Image 1 (cartoon, rainbow over the protein chains, first blue to last red):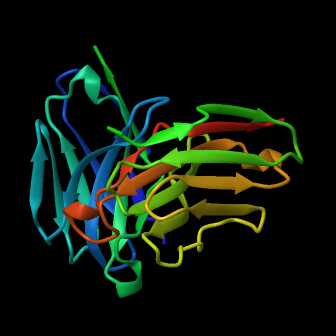
Image 2 (cartoon, rainbow over the protein chains, first blue to last red):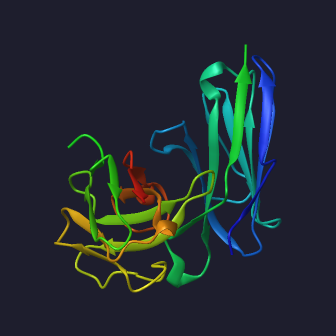
Length: 113
Length: 117
């Protein structure tokens, strides 16, 4: 039950905003967001634990709607350094799945000067 | 160490050979995960270890894949009789605990790029 990310890819000009969505068909406990630059390890950005909660990291924020089983990542006034592939990792509400993340296929973000 | 360390960073092997990939987790992290990432794809869960508990092997694609971890230290992922479809980046991650919340945040190594010729 891999979460679905959209869009698959997006190209921005520096300073533009973007939204990346992550949807699951299963009830979720949490959503983790990671960014991976080419040839590097995925880096943790933020974790969303409660319904409707928003977390922020510099000009990157995210929301988590438990009822809709989805999370969105908001990138504001994008910088060149934001380029990379963004992955959401979802943690299901099932007790046996605690701590086990299922990752989406990723959204490739390219920020141009 | 300061972060998750994986070795080798690159491995080229011939079809049918066995390979061993190594992961050194962050000191003090009890949970360790292995993922496979094919070119342009997401992270595919393979196996996870938590302390001395039985590992969760539910993601291993075939019996050619196995992994070991001694206590809360180094882990080795072994692929026997490698096939071309095994070519991918193998990523290791560790977390303080396998739990929901901040203590379950996973920290990744840079990966081992495996190429099977």
